[in-house]
Amino acid sequence: MKAYTTKDSVYSKNNAQKIAELEAKYETEKKQKQIEILEKEAKYNALEKEKSQKEVELLSREKQLLDYEKNVKVKELELLTQQNRINQIESEKKSQEIELLNKDKVLKESELERQKTFRNLILVALFSIALIAFFIYNRYQIKQRSNKLLETQNTEILFQKSEIENQKQILETQHKEILESIAYAKRIQEAMLTSELYIERNLKRLNKS
Image (cartoon, rainbow, N blue to C red; front, side, top):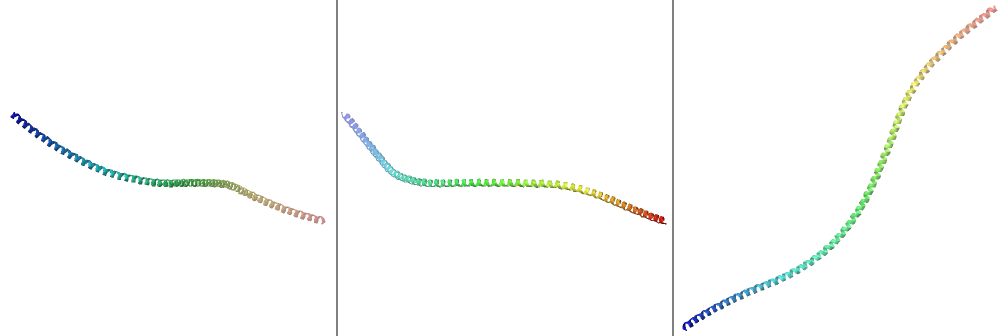
């Protein structure tokens, strides 16, 4: 009985010691868990604080973003206004360019027409010059032929004139010879008449004697 009591006492002491150890361990684990919980809460609070800061930063950034978007929209509106103005200027520029192109086209057409007229005048002038040159050349050829013909005719005339002069000289010579013959015959006749008269006078004288 005493041994059982001693044994029970030792068992109870061991149990008490184990319980104390378990309680100490529990308390330690509890404190550790509390510390972990506190650390987690601290971390959570830090995260919440960080989250709040980030939310504030995010809101600030969103505000900045909204302001930026607003500024962007204002800039876009200004750009659209400027683009409209540029488009208007471009449209006016294109209209001016089209007008200038039309004027240039009219000027080119006028220049082409002037060049065409000038070319036609040159062609007419060249044709006229060629025609005049042809007439001049033709007249020159005709004149040359006429000169050759005149030269031939002059040669023939000179030849004929020479022949006529020769014939004239021959005729003059013959006429001179004829006149000389007539004069000689006349002298002979006169001489014969003189002789007949002399004989007749002498016969009359003899008859009278």
